[in-house]
Image (cartoon, rainbow, N blue to C red; front, side, top):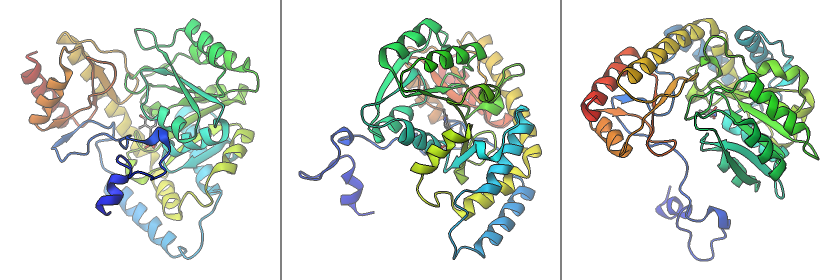
Length: 377
Ligand SMILES: *Cc1c(COP(=O)(O)O)cnc(C)c1O
C-alpha cells in the first residue's frame, strides 16, 4: 500500500469525497501484537489437530481443481452440513433453506442490515455490547441507538419495551452470550423482545448473535429453539470461536426461509469462495473432536471465574469463552502491566473492567501469575 492510500481513511486530502461520517475514523480492530500469551480476541487457543489439517488440505486441493469456475453461489452442501451440526449441537431441526452463511458472522450481520436497515431506519441494541454493531449501522446508513443494559448486564424488560416504542427500530441486535460481559439472555428476556418487536409497525427483525453459543453453561438454552414460532427472528453463529476457525472466516445464521431470501438479494454474487466452503465442510466433519475441546475450555472458564472471585474481584456470570473482571481504578495500568509480562488481554467494556479470553491451562497460569504481581492480589 502506498503511504497516500494508507493515510486516506483517516486523513483525506481536501476534496477527497469521503462520506462525512467516516472522516477521522480509525479502522476497527484490537491490537495485533507479537506477545507469548494472546488472550485478547476470544479465539480458541488450540490449533486444528493434524487430522483436521490433513482433511482441510485435501478438501482445498480438491476445490483447487475447479477454481477456473465460480463457486456454488448458494453453497447448498455447506448449508446442509451446518443444519446437521446445529441439530447435534442444539437439538433443533433446521432445513438447509433456513441457513445462511458468509465470510464471518460480521458479514452475515452486514447482510442483515443491508436488507432490513438503511436510510430512514433504525437499529437498536443494548450496551455494553459488541463494538462492531454501530459500524454495521453506519456502513449501511442505518440510524444507531444503544439502550442500556441493567447493572448486572441483563436486559430490563421495561427498558426494552420503552426503547422499542420510542425508536421503532427495523432491526434489534442482541448478543447472547454478550460480548464483552459474557451474559446470556434468559429465554423470557428474548421472548419479551420478540413480543415488543411484533408490535413495531412495518415489522422488526430480531437478531440474536450467538457467536459464543457453544460455550453456554448447562441449562442455558439457545435462541434456535424459538425459531419455529418467530419468522422475524435470526440466530447468528460463527466458526471463529468455539470451532477454532477464526482464520477461515465463516459465519452463519438460522432463520425462516423468507428472511433468508431477503439476504440472498443483498449478498455479492459468489461471496463465499469455493476454498472457504471446502474448508468449512472439512472442519464440520470433525465437529465431535472440536466440541470435546469446548468442554475443556468451559471448565477452564469456570475455574478462572472462581479464582478471580476468590481474590476479591467482581466477575459477572459468563456463558462465553471469556471473563469480564474488575473493577480497577486504573484499568489501563493493569492491562499494561500484564502486557509487560507477555500477557495480552483486552481493555474493553465499561470503565474499570478488563476482559480475558480463556486460553490453555499454561496460558491461564501465566495470566494469573502476572495479575497477582500487577494487581497485588
Ligand atoms: C467474535 C464475534 C463475532 C464473530 O465474528 P466473525 O466475523 O464470525 O469472526 C460476532 N459477534 C460477536 C459478539 C463476537 O464477539
